[in-house]
Amino acid sequence: MKEWILWAAQVASDWAIPLLFLLIVGAAAFKKVKLYEEFVEGAKEGFNVGVRIIPYLVAILCAIAIFRSSGALDFAVNGLSFILEPLGIPPEVLPMALVRPLSGSGALGVLSEGLETYGPDSPLGNTLSVMMGSTETTFYVLAVYFGSVAIRKTRHTLAACLIGDAAGLIAAIYVSRFFFN
Image (tube, rainbow, N blue to C red; front, side, top):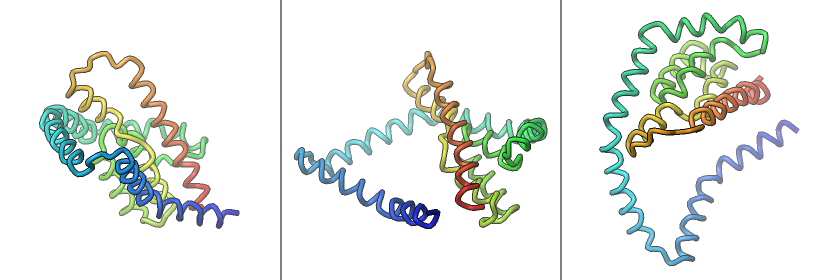
């Protein structure tokens, strides 16, 4: 059973992007959309958005650097490890769980450090890798994108995003345990 699931996951992974690409091209051809011209127009808009978000990007990256270098991350890991161990969650994954909602590049640093420390094929290395792809950089997205279009009242966005992040992180831990242990 487990081999069949792994095979199906591999096939789905191999074909997901090519099929999505063909679906988009096919839908554009069906609707007679000039795909290349629309792509270029979207790229121009993307560049303008990129210029508008730079101040917000700098602000969030500074905040993350302060969080890591102040020792607050290490303090949080040490303070929460006694709660995580009885739940079967290795405390070593907590830095990823805390940094990932803040920054993709910060999480990549945590991932690289974890892979170097525990090894890329270790259970912790696999768990960290799955966690990296299982959630979004919530605070980064909210700060950059909402800030760039001057949205001040986000209502329930932050709570919904953090619940999604928590679900993704927990699922990553237990799915990794199922597939890699």
